[in-house]
Image 1 (cartoon, rainbow, N blue to C red):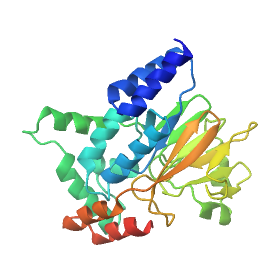
Image 2 (tube, rainbow, N blue to C red):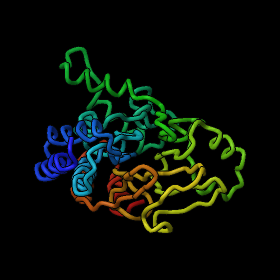
Image 3 (cartoon, helix red, strand yellow):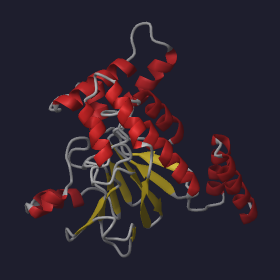
Image 4 (cartoon, helix red, strand yellow):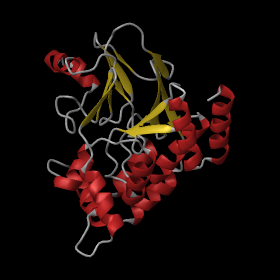
Length: 289
């Protein structure tokens, strides 16, 4: 297929935003051998407004592919809608600790987190009389994998050592937890280890230099053979004192963190309207903590 035809398919998708146009462009690009950028999302936490804004931002950046590092549910007021959108729009998703808690029980969760999971289960778990769509949605969650290896890169929610539970944080470096990082860098990846879980967008180099997107000017270009740990941030509950949704675009060796404003107040008010969800979860969204 000619380059002009590819650009025409891309232009049509950007104009319409239609799913069929997005898929037509992706299929044509892959057949032509083009490197197609991918959006890496994480920690959506049932925040429909944030996710909707991210889809729109992806469209503006010409990014039609998306994958998810888990935590589709928990904390937020729209688990059903978010799970359905991830099923439809993401090529795959991993299992996060909140997804796992939904399926197996919220052990070692704080009160607000546990109550959110218990309420989410009433919204999603199938019953004897449930329709097929309800059962299929639950079955999708049950099939989420713990990690993915693609080329030189590894994708996991938390850490290769404990995929759903372990955090990789700046404090680990300050506390001199060198053995932990030796084991993490021994995992099967040669270039990027993509994680979420902590909700803190960041990059950790092999020499344990810790950098934020601000330190990097919002982007990073991989060079040489160095392994790098990359936290993609959180779409649905950012915790770096910036309430805007955060996700990452990968274009081969180049990474770009994207911050996207969304209607935080609408999501917060939905949370406050649900007695099962703590008002503190709404305030966290407003403050980005």
